[in-house]
Length: 363
Image (cartoon, rainbow, N blue to C red; front, side, top):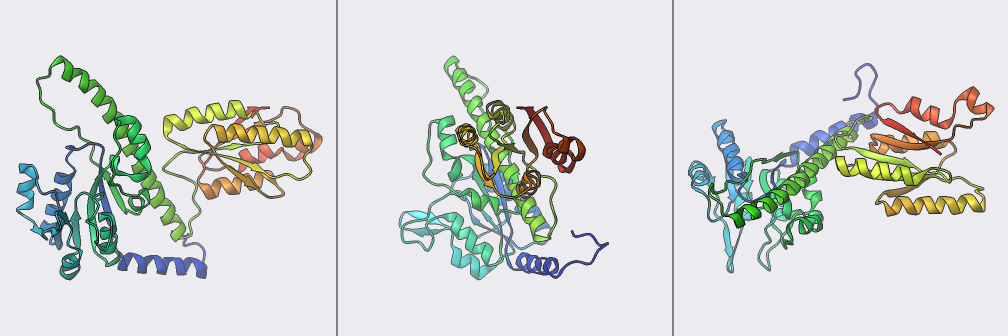
């Protein structure tokens, strides 16, 4: 929140009022995220519904699998269930019935399901969005395999591509995300062939679990950013690592990018590169710059061209705005009189980069 030691600006007060009005009118989404079938998402979700009902919250089940394990069935017996609507040979949640009933909280399993042709919305997650817009809180579940933007990574891990998906933007709109981090139950006795399959399966589950953890971190990061922007708080921290490589015509970009990529892969960090546009570059410097920008793009970095008279200030402002946690910068050991008297741009960058790590590479 803005400091109470100073008077808040009209813009800050307006943001607070708008945030409170939005929160009051719009439903909140909670997502139980799994990385494999059978980890217990439905049970955890319905168990939370049971606990909420015990606290006198108005909870209904608006969508659940037609066949459930006995433990899930036992929970369902204790909850009010709004039956699914049969359209053709496919079932979908009955949005109209839920809007008439207007519970405080609605449980929706299988957020990635597609609706039958001719439905008001093609996808179940869009039905959920309608409930949220109506002020109904929704608790839903989905497996990491069904996130649309991760389909290529999932295909590389499992060899399978799913057709029913949820966009990552919808997951990021959740006010809460909880990973169901429990391994599926397996039979104890295994043949040699099954044991070999287990090794492959454990490797796949490990990779899928990594994806789920990264997505959860991204959601938390998104929530943090929205909160800080909503209340006009200047942020100095992030839930996710973000690396910024500063490019100049003389920077040792190849070494900088190799190090940045290694760290980004290890910590699932976002990788960016930036160049502050400088007029009157020589033809040689321009060619060297283009070569270094190609190296950055080839390494998978998102490249930004920035403008401003003071490169150090421009880089710092960009880094703060984008939530950068690490800055890579090149620096020559040769310094002129001005740099010795007033400090080089790199010196000023290091001194002003509160909340960020600065790594200097010789060039």
